[in-house]
Image (spheres, rainbow, N blue to C red):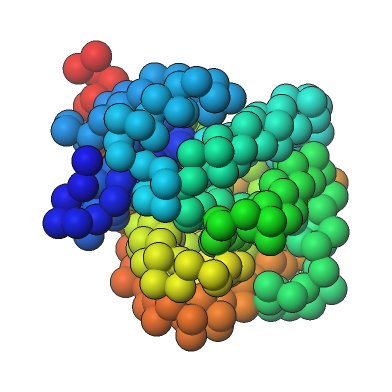
Length: 341
């Protein structure tokens, strides 16, 4: 099951937001891909035609073994990109056991299956939430990891599992810590499709299209230029490209593992994002000022020098208006898809 000699890459959660963009990036780069997704938060339409799709869960070890066999993975061939999991911070506080099950316990089953089969490369979708509230303005990979919620802890525990397993078995690992992922495929092949999403740009675009009455601004008294929280927004397609480069780097040096922050190294405040949505959509959003949410840092910006220097990664869409325009185009296409259904 190879194309031009390349082994298959199994993408877990490949019907979800970031996973589906990784599938597109891998296919565009000539990699054969297979997807496993339980479709709890993913969408079958997000998986391109021709990509082998397995409707199931990563805690099903028998299914994983079958996928590896059918896709020619194992015994030193193939790779896993692991996106499957739960990602809503407030939900993790309300239901921590769900997060330790979905993000940690299930990941253990997947890692064990990979080791048992002999799949040699593993790329993990981690998060800046593992840093908690850092003491520095720009967060490097060496910044102490002090999560403040179960979501961050569940991801950090999986990072630690992978680090220990890589030291004990012939597996090399790429851990990518995401900052704020936004936007959609420039060709509108995929985007963020989840109903009730909490990401600011997605929420703001829904409001601009009349799907929400307003946008909440949680806190205006942060130590930032305009008083609202500042975040580092990375275009989902630039993030997907970083995954492909990480895969290539792991395959080129089987004894090497990587941990990389994924962001642009600059931030935008909540007000700046909402102003940009106004500008791109030519509408004025209704802002609702509310109190701070517990645990929100004033500013969270990536030091992404290691990503750039190690992989030669250069973002193509590092412009806030472009990120919003792509997200807007997807939201309009999504409305057509739902209407057609």
